[in-house]
Length: 357
Ligand SMILES: [Zn+2]
Image 1 (cartoon, protein in one colour):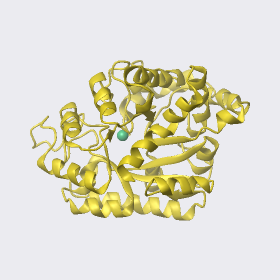
Image 2 (cartoon, protein in one colour):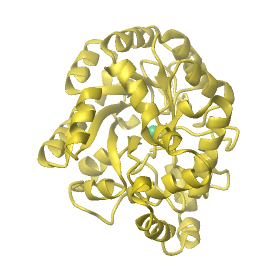
Image 3 (spheres, helix red, strand yellow):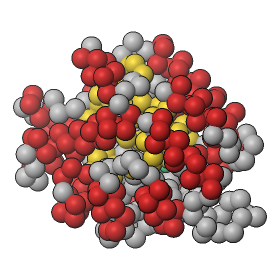
Image 4 (cartoon, helix red, strand yellow):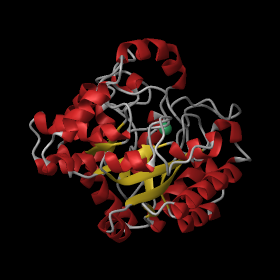
């Protein structure tokens, strides 16, 4: 849910430039891959597909030619763990955010209950058990701490529902901190970073075992959060500023700080985060991964596709069935199987185990 405006501007260009599905070629390539390559499991740190259910009435249990993700396509793409975001749009700020979050978490519960191929995971043991049964583990996460509506007790409520990480802000400011655009609420002084309530939220998230996600935060907020949290923090869906100067991307110092705390950066597939031209390919995603690896090592990078939250996708990564093509590209790039496993999922699972148990 990041780059709708730019994406709309570029949509026609993208359609023309993509032609008839680069992913089709990649998919055919993946079908001829040796089984060992196809079997590398994928953990995707961010999708907005719950909004597809709530706002568009799409049934994620059946294969669709709409959107980027559904259960049959997740299976085809080798996804073993998917984080489902409860995105709180600014139109629900400040007093209807909790109610909106409840509506989306209800939709998640119904989706998981009705789909035998998916089960909700609350901890690492759950993930292993669910994957062991051949099912996809679904992790519930909140994108936008406005959902708490300024009440610490709501953290307990969401923890009990199984929420295991919270993106503290979306792009606008809320009761916890400022977002990258720092425009809301208008009455508050801009660029003040983390609020007193925000500090209490971080302390309680550390105690409960809820991961802190810094994607969408302003730089001031970011540094205050990193200094405040006693546990690793993640950026679930952000890319690299040095390769593409977009406000949502992370500068080198931020990437290093996340790595030093033992967290991960999930590379976002939004084309305008990957390439300043606004058009991107699978190779751009690989380049962003390479950059993080070169800067801090192979243990701190992950995948946060943002599928169903972005209006356009990189050529070669049109939807979730294309993940094997990314795996293949990383292997061709010279990464060992073990390193690709880390990037595609194990790095995140390490952090998840450390913080959420
Ligand atoms: Zn987002």
